Length: 532
Image (tube, rainbow, N blue to C red; front, side):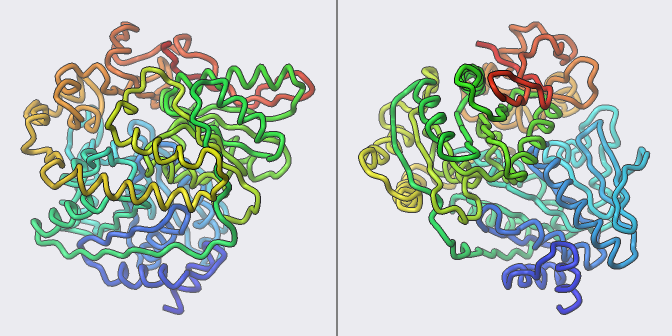
């Protein structure tokens, strides 16, 4: 392993942790099958998987749940490939596939540059989204080389890495299980690594059952968290409702900290907080950069804001406030000093707070948990899991516990809920569930008419399945190939969209701006869909 240790350190700048070396040894021995890795966010799962793949000479296919994560991953991997190409004098290539929008980077002598090509599929590292992988695996996409991934995994035997798979789990794990029913077939031909920060045991057990059913070799590694220099932060619980509550705590934190994350539940709340906070900072003469990110923004707009925010967070100079929905939760490499967070289930809170004091090196981080501002959000009904979470948090309203104290109690509630409410029978099997009759529809017609596989194969309830009003479809910004966003079917009907195109002037301004001395200046231009 000496050669691998040098290879790893050349790329990343540090030697692998013992658990990363163990993962590397297992991957280097794998011909096919599945390796399940559970490790906390930011622990180095990507490096532990990609580096042994590259070292062995395999192609590495990296599959992310969201385009924003693809952008983040490409930035990280291109830096690694630059260093490897300089050290070993060998060119490396990195391909990105968003679906209808691909690019290829060649890294030679310490520098990566984009090259023109229509066939980037043979790159050393191939980064894509789960939706796009499914399009190509199932040969259902229109006007695309739909079977290219199937050919790759059967003929080229690459290492396939599914990152941040917890992003697909609903309360009962339906999306993740549905996806894995399809993609586990890859492991019949090539090694597959599935990495996650948090997955309910019931979902993990179901996945293992699928592996056994297909007579695949599988191994699970649970990586214990590293010792932390300091707690995540001190928690304040204020279960008051409304945008004003969020604004009050945000302004208070901004007086004491340089960077603040505001995580809310729905895009409408995010946009309202963004506009109100912008006006408050302007009127108060406070200097800060402020942006908003949510799932109703076109993917390129969202990625531009994300990159600018990350750059400013790392600069260490200006105050930064980002207002975001759970679109910010999955794996993105952002680190804030403090956060205001709307009440959500434990696993979502844990994911969000992975963006606050990420490496536990700040002594005075603060976290404020507030109630949900959106009056139409129905998960707080009496007897619901989230109502129980709120009741637990109430006991801390006059105290100042660390997040670790609160987390341990919420985690026990989560385990209790999982054991009592969920069973293997609750997990929807995409091939047998009555709510998955859409699979009997022609895939080609389904995608031509509607949107993505995950949006229409997965349904969380009979009423929603039958109406489709709240399920998302993908629409493209008119005249901007590949710049798409997801919107509810009901919204698309109200907007009377044609050919799944949405005019740019239908969207509202979501610019990332700099406020200084009572004036504002645009840093990044962006838009988003707000319907209320």
